[in-house]
Image (tube, rainbow, N blue to C red; front, side):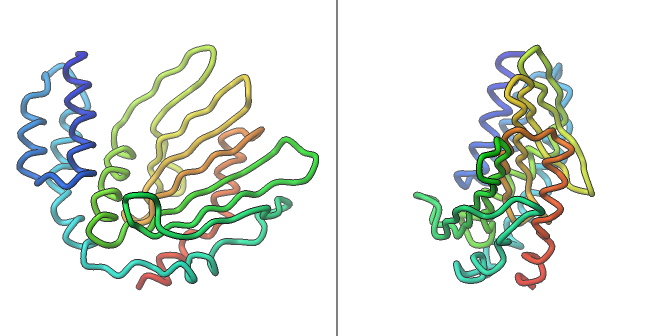
Length: 206
């Protein structure tokens, strides 16, 4: 089981750093049969090539477009900071926003990476695989699971003692979204995600 989990992790790394689909499949075949999610990875690996081909030649949204999309408020939470520009060494366009109410514990932050282009297409594929990797684990500290909300598959982590929720997902197989919400239950966090109006990003990308 331990070696199988290592193989699955390696698959994600291979995709992110540009390995061919054949290499991914080869690693999959070496995973132990006892890992129930291996079948899911095999199916997803077959879709990888078409996803990458579709996105690698797409034109990323500009920083100005991403900045213009980022809401100034989410319900009663006001935007207190933002950042646009290329994300580190990956050279992909991204936008980050932070929202809160002064003197309250509630805080919501979001980072969106445009998965268009040669590097972005690899990253978007890896995020897509995370959403389809069915899992659930829980202890006294946190509850982590794969969820589907409003047609979006995501990795959701809820930290019980701090009331902190994290979401990671690929929106429309292109935009890579990471959300961190302080003093918010998962249901409250998804309500804020709806207020982001991510569909406007896909409208701009058409």
